[in-house]
Image (cartoon, rainbow, N blue to C red):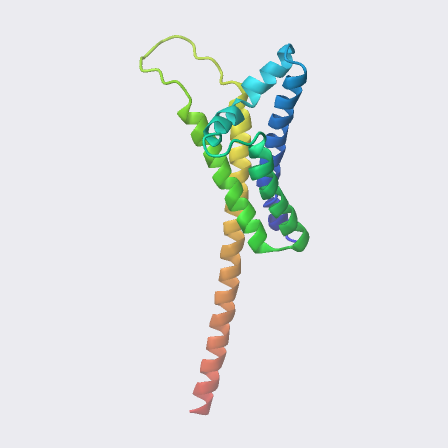
Length: 177
């Protein structure tokens, strides 16, 4: 199997792992609400999922919907695509993971406060949530790009085969004349 074909799995896998980790952090916080480390993990590292959950709760009021309704089905599609070596399943999984990653970024940006003044003060380094978001977005976009690259390769091969057939048939026609 082509390495690029397997690399498409990276985006849905990273999305599922991050969503699962965020959901586990929320569940752990329910059992230990006084844990400072769990609050840090939940608010700083996985804050992006809280904002997107707030937007999704307007449409779907199910706890854990980001994991069970979005990330898990995308991951299952990618697993099926990998097991069956099916391009269409991988295409659907990578496109959905890229769309979900863009939704996460959009929901994260909408909730950010804006500051409209210039300052010569030092700027704080962004929290860990930015790195989680960048990892998710980067891997999903990489999978998305690889999917398109593989389709362009397949189309190129099919067009090349068609051109060779047409050239071969035109030679036969010229030889008959």
